[in-house]
Image 1 (cartoon, rainbow, N blue to C red):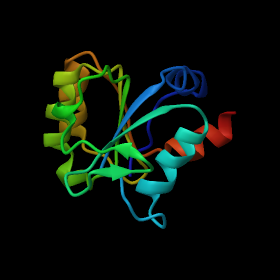
Image 2 (spheres, one colour):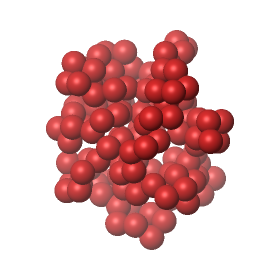
Image 3 (cartoon, one colour):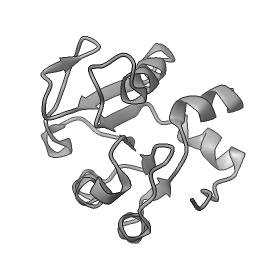
Image 4 (cartoon, rainbow, N blue to C red):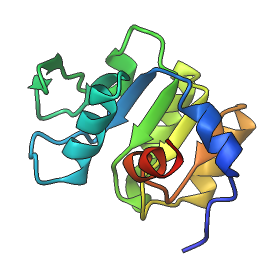
Length: 136
């Protein structure tokens, strides 16, 4: 898989944003889609769970869709397979986040291009937990 081209300095700047909507956040503590956002919450980020099958995760109200979120979102962190990213990005664009972050193993050039055309920075195939630990 292609490597994301962001520099360490560019990635560090993303961590200045505090409101992170996590699409595909899991109730299962064994899954990265649970322990990555849990780590971010423990580091002081406002994690907003998005999962149509849950009402609450980590003691936070869980939204069924990005479009249900009424507070500003800085980063949309995506835990969905690459072939399921397009509808997520189409929804995310409506929220106008600063960044869409596709977790490790996720890359969809067509969807990423759509986000970039809307003026949204896109990080792909990187883990928010691993990058935070590496850089801070």
